[in-house]
Amino acid sequence: MPADFEAMWRDLAPVGRSSSSGGYFRQPFTGPERELDAWFAEQCAARGLEVERDRFGNTVAWWRPPGAAGPAVLTGSHLDSVLDGGAYDGPLGVVSALAAVDVLRDRGVTPSRPIGVGVFVDDTKVLTDTATLSADGFEGPTSTWTVGGPPAGSPPNAGNWVIGPKAINFFAGTSTDDTLLLGFGLEQITNPADRTALIRRALSGLGVR
Image (tube, rainbow, N blue to C red):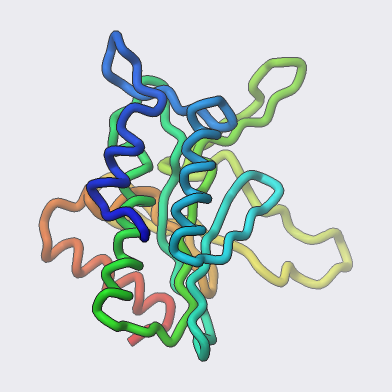
């Protein structure tokens, strides 16, 4: 039987926590982050979710009920953290997404679209001879990375992304024709009306009415 929200949170609480500062050290591909990755796989197996991984370490667990089709709904966060990060730095979005799947199932909801719970690698760096050339993170403005144009004489890129204006007072979103990536957790929008308005804007931008 899948663990509930409180049980999942208790599982994660001690992993990577510093005994001196109380902060968390869960850098990508270190022991604590790998332990959390294994925990996520166990939680997905308990729910019968289909897990997919890419070559960069990003993971998506899919709930695809019979008949679910069309563009998917993807939510989640990251399990790694900044150095000496807080307890909510990433895992809250993952645990909440798994708990949301449980609530929908308990209420007998059968989604018409596939539902994905994602765990994304947060901090990305380009290294050469141990020197960092560039670095970026999930919460950043993604200014480090750009999509280059096609070679001369070639057709335009089939896909691209743009950095949107501020979605709230200090965070932006990255969007494509069918995807919207927000570099923050919705819990950081403390006003319920503002949070609802942002969700409506996001769904409207994706063509969902």
